[in-house]
Each structure stands twice: as structure tokens, then as C-alpha cells.
Image (cartoon, rainbow, N blue to C red):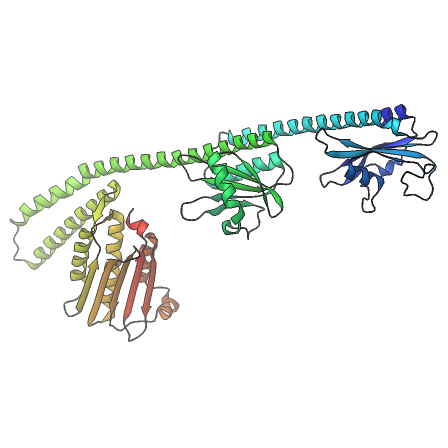
Length: 491
């Protein structure tokens, strides 16, 4: 300002710059009221500064020259206003000079334009320096965030770190991460993101998102009148994700390059989580196999030997005494139960699979064991030829066994129907019905809390991620129906 006033012999002047909202404010001045510094300039009435900012052309005002514009009724001085512009023509401010002892003319414009151009260069350099400094600070924070000794424990934590990094780099605060699953993409993380903006509401972004995923490089698009950033996260080991950000400031190529690096860091963290879980799974399998070997070579062998020796001993014991016979039977049952339990633990530790045919055979045994002879039973098993994990097999058997045990002890039924099968929807359906005395489920819960057997049923069905319905009323029998999803059956 001092140089401009000295060059032109002016008495006063001001430099107006645009803020983030494209409004002009007084950034500097000479011989003006101090309280005016920093204030916005009212542009609603087409002020001189506003006209110069919009047109990008200099303007001379002198009331002694009727050819020039004057917005005031009287003017004791001459003034000139010039745009401050970048190389691309973008106007970022206005330089105003006022003189009393002289008149501005067209001859003053070239050298004042050179001065305005120098001001623009200084502003640009200052902006770039501040931008570089802010990027360096942000990068140091990001490196500290992603390079810390502490490992991310979940994808949620990774996305939180990513959102903080993007906020430091861009100043944006509204963003969301979408998981691009094969069936239907859905939102997995959001920060100040409008809750109503689900994947289905982003139709216009679906194609741009596909393009940035293919390029594996960030992209800028307009959405609902707002500049938006699409930041892809693509890995060979994990699902594909995209971060959608509503921007407050414009980004350049360097910003996109830095954001691409940040996305790569986030993908590396997601990969580390994947490898960590894979390693943990492998370690668990090794430990399970070790325990299975120990159990097989230790307790299982001892129980099997005990059963063999007891068989020889049984032939030498006097069996005439009823107490002796009862004791022998109990020891045989306990030994058999111990061997069966050890086989179950071995199969579960090894992650063994059981054929559906084996399940059908086992269900036949359970029905014969738990349905009294006087009850007429109808059985239907349609399980096909697949396989299922041993623990799933065991849980299904326990569900049917628990339901039939309730029929045996409480129903006083004459007929029962047991149906277990895989239907068209791919789910396993279990249905056990009887025509017994029935009960009121709500009354049972009010009286003593839910019956222990019913609680067991619900717990086991929940373990299989299934759904259980119990339909009953006094005098009208009971229907127990469970549905098990396909992914559980396949392990």
C-alpha cells in the first residue's frame, strides 16, 4: 500500500481480498479508519469494488469528468480501482487508491496493473507456502497415526483414522465409507454424514465410483450442487471400499496424490487386519490339532482300553445279584458316555464334517429313544447329500432331542410329527409337533421365568444364527419350529 501511494502520489488507499465465501473484505489500508480493517464490503448495491471484481477491468472515478462513474453526490478527490488477478484471470481482490492533489488517467493504469500483478504473485506465493506447510503438518500427523506401534483392532478404527487424515488435509468434515459388496453396497462408517444418504440415494455417484475403483485413484465429482471427493480403497485380500467426502475447498492434483497415499495406508492397515485374523485362525487350528492329538493319544485311548478290560471283567463277575447288575450297567453307560464325549470333543477340535446322511441316521435314533411306544410318530427327513461341521450336527441333534424330551415328559400326547429338511430356500427347517395338553408360553414366563428346556432350545438355535418359534395353547398341543440359515450349514 505504501509503495502504491508513493508511486501515484495518492493520499489514501485500501486492498480488498476475497474470503472463502467469495466476499470482499478490507485486508490492508493506508490513511483509512482503523476500525474498517477486516470488515466485509457491502456488494449488494453494486459498489465500485464489486463492479471491478466482477468485470476484471480497472475503473477511474472523477466527478470533474462527467464521462466517468460516480456513486456519490459530491466527490473532492479522484480515485482508481484495479483488479488483483492470478495468471489465469481469476480475480482475488481489488486495489483502491484515492488522490486529492491530482487526477488519475489512463496513463496510470499500466504501471498500477503491474503493481496489482505483483500483489497477486505475493498472495499466490503466500498461499502456496501456507498450503505446503499445512500439508507437511498434516502428513506428519498422518504418518504418526498410521505408523504408530499400536495396531488397529478393527476396520472401524481404520476408517476413523482415515477420516481424521482426510479432515486434516482437506478441512472437510462430512464423509462416509461404503463397502462395495457383491450383493449390495452399504455404508459401514460415517462422520457428520447425513443419516438419510444411504447407498440407494447416491445413484448419480455409482458410475463415477466404479471409474475411480478401476483407476485406483481419487476423483472429484459434483453431487447435489456440492464438490465431492471419491477416495477408493482396493486390495487383493479385502473387500473394496470407497470414501465419499463433501468438500468445502477445491483440491488440486497434489492434494489427490497425497490422498491416494493416505488411502494406500488405510488399505495396508485393512490388509494387516486380514493377515492378523488369518494368522490367528491358523494358530487356533494348530492348537486345536495339538489338543486333539493329546486327547486321542491320552484320555480317548485310556477310555477305550477301560471299556475293553471291563468287558473281560464283566464275564467273571457274579451277575445274580441285582445290585451288582445295576452297578455294572451304570459303569458301562458311563464308560460309553465318556468315549462318546471324547469323540465329540475330538471331532470339534479337528473341525470335522458330518454327512447329512449321518445326521438322518442319528435323528432316527433320537426319535426312537425319546418318543414313548404308545405315541404314534410320523417322521420326515429330507437332508440331501451334503456335509456340515460337526458342531452344527451336534447342535441340531441337541435341538431335536430337547424338543422330543419335552414331548416325552410334559405333552401326554397320542401323536407326534418330526420333520427335518432343507427346503427350496436353502435353509434347514426343523418342525416338531404334538397333539398333547399344550401350555401358554406367556403364562409360563410370568410364573417362573421361561422353562429351562425352552431356554436351552432358544440358546442352541441362536448359536446357529437361526430363528425359533414355539406355538402352543392349553389343550391344543405344541409346535416347535426352527430355521437355520444355509451359510451355517456349509460352515
